[in-house]
Figure 1 (cartoon, rainbow, N blue to C red):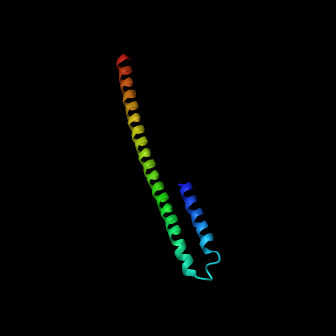
Figure 2: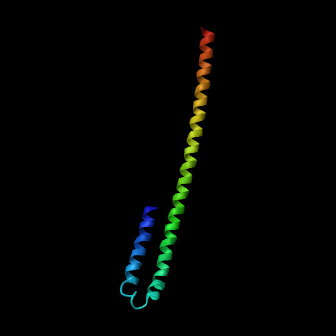
Figure 3: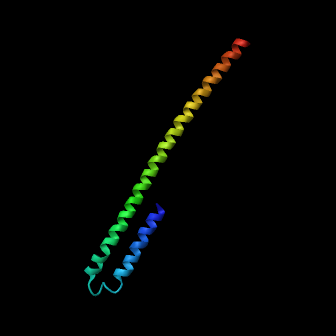
Length: 93
């Protein structure tokens, strides 16, 4: 994600330098029009990076929930085993 965002920002900076230097006094609309596709691409890349980050967060939340469920099941089984051992000890005693 950081790599994609870095590429997008570098592209945006390069477009600003290439299209913005020396053209703003001559024809400001030409510079804006020339930089428009690059800026749009950079914004689109940033949006995709945000979407990927959201998906990664969602996957991490699901993994955490699965781990919590597995831990609860293991604790329940351990409790049952301890209860069975206690009963066996009571019968043997």
